Structure formats: C-alpha cells, structure tokens
Image (tube, rainbow, N blue to C red; front, side, top):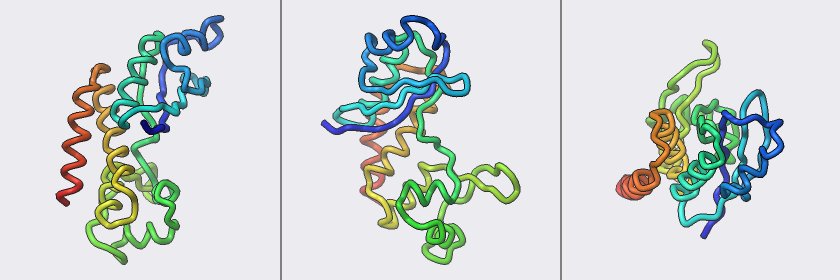
Length: 179
C-alpha cells in the first residue's frame, strides 16, 4: 500500500450543519482534512491504496456516500510555467527553455490562455513529455493522466468508474513503457 495525496472539490452540503464533518467520517473519509472555501467543500485526502486509481475511485465513492456532489479532483489539470516548475522541482527558467524549444523538442503547446500573456498547459500532456524526457518519474505522469481521466468521468456524471480507471491506468502505464 502507498499513500496518495489529492483533493476532491465538492458541493451540496451545508457546512454549518451539525453533522457536516461526521457525515464524511462515517462515509469513509476519515483520511481527509475537510474545509469549506469559497462555497466549495474541499476534501484533502491522504489515502492508502494499492494504486492512485483505487485511491481516487474509493474517495469519490466515499464523498458521494456522505451526500456531497463531487465536482472535480485536484491538483488542477491546467498549469502555468510556474506551476510546471513547482510540480517537477525544476526551475522556472528551465521550464521556459523547454517550452521555447531551446532544450528538447515537442514540448506540448498551451491549450488555453488566461490573458494573452498567460498561457496554460494540460498537466497530463506536460507530465507525459517530462517523463519521456527523464525529468519526472513515471508514477507522476500516470497520476496526472488518471486525475484528468477521473475528472472526465465526473464531468460526464459517471461516478462509478473504478474498474474503468484501473484499466486505463494499466493501458497508460504500458503506453509510457513503449514510448
């Protein structure tokens, strides 16, 4: 077993209710720190599981059992160059060189812009590139992909994705090995 750290952002429960925290504890979220920020329930998990897929799927099921509406899993899938540097432990300057093509080829292009000067990248694509270029461990790339995939299931209203997420993890692991 390994401990996986991630957050679930949820809604649908009154944080002022007497049984607010107890509902999560009784539903199996005893390994989460619960807070309420800007109208959202934040469940900050340190979940022991065999895999990140199992950790995320079971946490979503437990949060749902508590009566919460799961909105998304974090860490956020959209990242700036500074976010990429922080997640990889590399300098902002090094990440900028990768992005510009000064060091390495085929760095993923940004997928969105907050402003014309603030591009955002898909973390799963960047993590895959970073793994292929020996900048991060494979586990970090797999985790990024599975958070993105889990958020896709959540966005589609499918909260029972345990088996599908596990299969995707296996396939993605093989894809990374072949690359």
